[in-house]
Amino acid sequence: MYKIEWLDEIANIPAQQWNAIVATDNPFIQHAFLLALEESGAVNRDSGWQPQHLLVYRGEKLVALLPLYQKWHSYGEYVFDFGWAEAYHRHGLEYYPKLLSAIPFTPSMGPRLCVAKSESRDDIVRVLMDEIRGRHGDKKSATMHLLFAGKELHEKLHSDQHLLLRRGIQYHWLNKGFSEFDDFLATLKSRNRKSMKRERNKVIAQNIEMQRLEGSEIEPTLWREFHRFYQMTYLKRSGHGGYLSQDFFERIGRTMPESLMLVIARYEGKIVAAALNFKDSRHLYGRYWGCLQEFDFLHFETCYYQGIEYCIEKGLICFDAGAQGQHKLKRGFEPVWTWSSHWINESGFRRAIDDFIVQENRYLEAEMIACKNALPFSIKT
Image (spheres, rainbow, N blue to C red):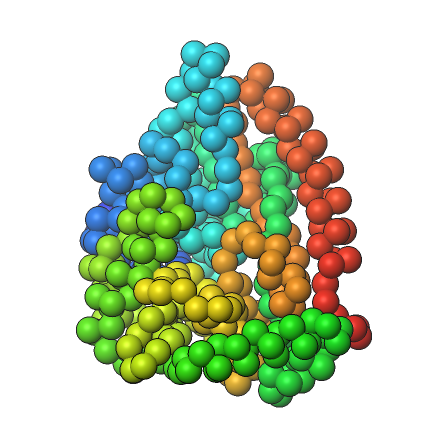
């Protein structure tokens, strides 16, 4: 009934055909975003991300797709399995290359398996897992991992295909129908409300001017400056210049401007910081930030408060400001579950990793309770 194709370059499928199956305005699953990653060199065999996208056809008609990569390392994923790879190595098995369905360098929940309305999602899941097991099942150490998809797909893979289900925690700001920023502030405890106002006023007192730019308002010359900020942040944090090149940012600026919102901070007329956000019709996604010099509370203003204001103004329901960061809690970001699924071919390691996930879940349940208790709200929203 179905024919499967493994695609090693997304350029080999027309954007219109890919996006028709995607059928969502989520920016990260769009052909233009994935193409920019590949054509800028961030994603290729040399970088350790070899595209192996799975396409499902009924006859000559594309009816489903799954972004997929063969990985030679675990960097840029944000669901950490370095310990698993080390355990494989200690037992004489090669963990890499592994198969990974994810959006490179993007720990944001969103569509992964995309299926045409005419098809049974359950049938597509079964066909794709049969294909993956058929191609890689003879390798004892073979694994496949799917990250940050919707809960429903992860639970389906767990119940029907017996993949291991793993959880994580992120912090998202949720719009409760606020009409202005002060409405949001009014939901906070007095000390948190005063603290947030003090942080914002401190930025103003330092004579910093904030501006939000959308789409075509982001001039091409800004990408060179933004990339420099981006590199400086990675150098401070990780000792390298980041995964993405100036070419990548210039490409998305040309090909998907409708999905971009750039916050810039100026001091004495000069841009000193910037944060790049992606957006769709319901969500804002904070992705990359950088600064030229340090100012008190500028990071929080640029990366959080400007995004919250934007969501309120545009009626967006959720602001995903990036992975990790419990400091977001006192600024009104709430803990939410994320999911990942894992096919582990070797039975001994599958049992060991399952035991690890069970123990990890106990810690995460306690962390979720602690996070909810730390929320700054004075009233139920």
